[in-house]
Length: 114
Length: 114
View 1 (cartoon, one colour):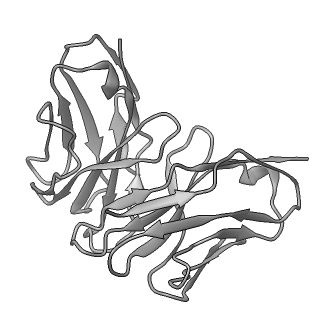
View 2 (cartoon, one colour):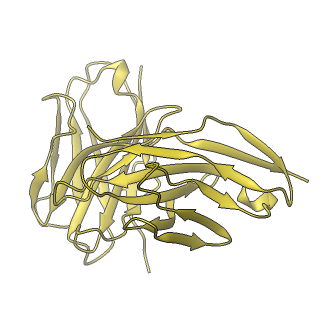
View 3 (cartoon, chains in turn brown, yellow):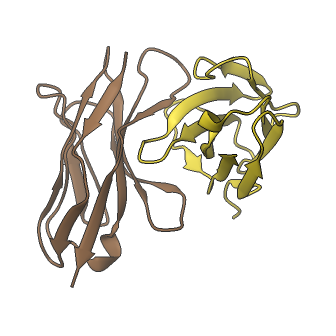
């Protein structure tokens, strides 16, 4: 079945540091890939997405590139801020059905300090 | 405009009791999803509605779980004979047509079974 594996947290960084959160996936076919973010006390929000190989999703300074050859979708940001502290979830959509249901990783908590 | 809303935000119930969790999707969204998020895990798919019908209920863990969407808008997730293992945050999401469109998540209902 489909699965998503992402690096365990928490990840603790100083402000302005470079961020990488690794994500790899297993799926039949060609899924779409997503990063969702959950800020403290808030619901899940879509951060960025990529729908085919070599696509780069980007938003709010975050980027991720769909790498089919390595089945990866790593999240990066060049300079994190305290306000980026949140839990980040990598997810894929089922490419074999019509439901577009999402399969999520376990989440990675990011803590950014001054 | 209004986002996805869920009620109640918190529900505490005793083992063996029946509970109902409500989801109000974004107006006009035809696709509605239920997910369950256990502590320290990513959300897991439960069921997907397209309009009034359950198009995919493959994620429901057993026959104690049931969901309805009688008028194609509001949905209710029903859990019979609750067990302590049902304790989790239940998330609802909606999208405009379910076909690779962004899913908008509600804040969730935290269910605790004592």
